[in-house]
Image (cartoon, rainbow, N blue to C red):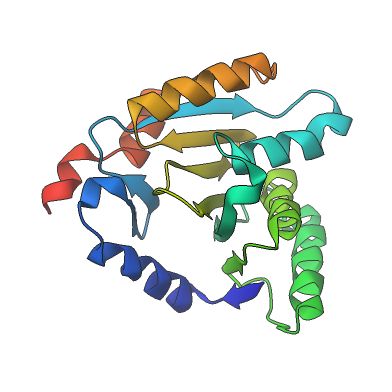
Length: 205
């Protein structure tokens, strides 16, 4: 795992700007990640009611639409926190700081906005992904795969919703059915989330 500052996260995302066509790749600005493909869409998921299903839920959304053996790494971007009580969130801050220290990179929670995982660190990525879910931090999770281009990213909301942002209609329909089969009760996202994460006109800018 590599711990990244805000500047390093921004530099990492700049690398996607060189790839063409633009609509095949993720984009980033100060408000977070988005797709420019005209087919981009969003699926909303609420957390499972039973606590024991939570690790399964996190693993499922971290790899949705792909096989785990094709995982090639991921970036988790802690985007916004402090919406609820800092007293409770402080527990999560300490957990993240201990994880950073364990990786030999003892950066504070406030400095360590990004966490980049290698291809052999899927369990680590899932464990870190669970932290913003538990402590209600707005975050982005972008996995990469050993074939093709990224078909989705996740937005974790402090409203206890995971939004699966899909790049194409075919991928959207396939994973929507998969989520239904897993009894995760997917639903189409509201217009606000679609407008935030899907920017078809931005491709020409």
